[in-house]
Image 1 (cartoon, helix red, strand yellow):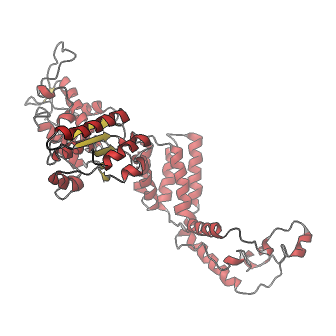
Image 2 (image 1 turned 60 degrees about the vertical axis):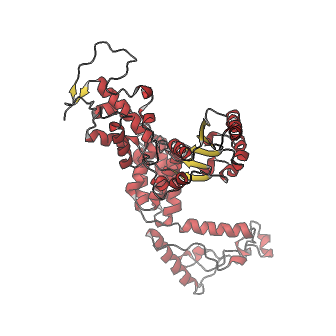
Image 3 (image 1 turned 135 degrees about the horizontal axis):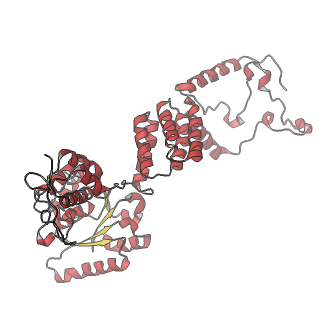
Length: 467
């Protein structure tokens, strides 16, 4: 149904609340995302591996006791809400600090209050200390928590968007359990939005979302429930300000209102955080896995997110040698050419060169045999080096050195058929060792066949002398 416009008020007060979207007086100043915070685990949407019927959080809630834990996941995945719900299920005092705004002094105050509580409570009320962005605490601040977690003064729940195994000190981490939260799926985001539209704590049915508007909002949220609710609230406010109502008098936002509210959605990407490493990992593995479509998608996401294109070009060069190798040596040429093109023309034009190299490397045959052979040889070099160089391979710039056998007996390959002759090149200790065994992929198959023909010829005694 096409929305109809309602005449705008002649002189609205700048701070006046929207009559249609106004919440209950006690929550009128709270954002929609805060008003719609789940009150029980049953209301919580997403993270079924944790809050589902057999999930560990259900068991914690049923038991009424919590271990100290780290909740590791992206923004809007429910870390703070789950901490509150678990504390409530355990009948605990819930204290929250932000690692961005707080320090050791605030932690000590919470600890002191927790130590004093058993003297006044009967029975004692446990304390759950929730620290948001715990990875922002430095080592000393994290270490200050150790004795109080260890002796049970507080149950610590830390939330982080960074890799907990890399950002939390090992001594503290060893005393906590790590739970990984995932971005919400589109169906889950849709449930969150639809509930907010209808719930009395939310928009109470005063807003109606057309199917295409809802679908776009869900897509824009990027798995972040808080982002979805903030977008919904801003979009509904814009639509109401424009007098967009349906026949039933409900606010009916259009796609244009949603796009205006969103402006340009910031990509959920941190150039030094998990998303950076996860996305480049997906890019590399898609190229290695022979999927040009996926490789091009991840390339596009890297570019859109503002990744340094020189970093991408370096990864392509590495891929060309590490994963394509001698199956198609043109891969390295093309990757280097793409990097040079980037330096010559920059973005956005160099996107063509990066895309060309990405698609080629993902499509061609793969071989990692050259790299594997090198690292096998390196392992021997590290374990055995320095091994003596065979006398006939040594450099003899002074003729008198030949009296010592240096340079004597070397056979010049070009003096023999096929420019090849049997002679020892490896150190004595490694004679007969083979490092490089070509695969049957692409050009490397031909290299393997050539090497085998040479081996066969070398079994025949030479018919010419060498210098």
